[in-house]
Length: 253
Image (tube, rainbow, N blue to C red; front, side):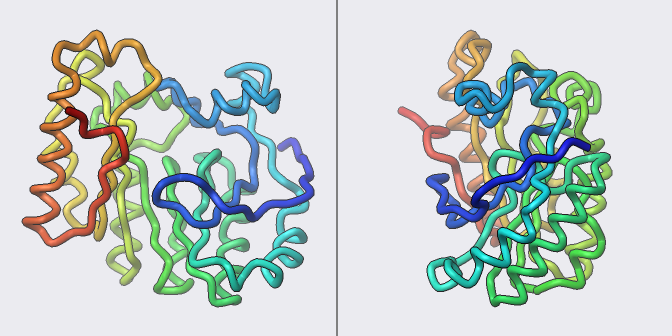
């Protein structure tokens, strides 16, 4: 795959539930059509020219060398590092990226730094051999494979994501799910409870609404829909003693 180099890698993120983050690839082959906010930003700042360009990821060839320089300088400031906010650390079908992600997590853990990771790919079983403080998650907004093929064409099938996450859970790892960006019923008719029940084993649930798509506002009473769905998630988490986070702007008046 194509390679790029960077001058720095670790940085403090402004994402509401993040601390430090690393994005050791540019672009993402999953090709999400929500649209993808990361792709929108990359186009705005001239990093990619088109959707097709975005779907051809490039790996940061000097990522591990940068880590060896940046970790000693920043580790006293870091509570945890998230992989990733603008790409996918376990991109489906890209072993080069997955292998680098594992090496990055190892370097951070060896320096006493906790990691979190989120993917629409397959979480490798090797992660169970790393720090028990790490937290591994998948994004899952539906169980309908036709919807996935339409909206996340290059991503891993839903059942494969869930099974890989469950395997890590069964090995004693901390697991979570991001149910975001959750679609309104004019995209797909579905029951949020079915998704919650499929992920009964996770320790934490993050829920957020779909943004940046005009079709959302075309759905009658979409604000109430997201309010009610978010409350369903909260009630489920409280009942089952799970941690949860509702993304800013999901619940509105």
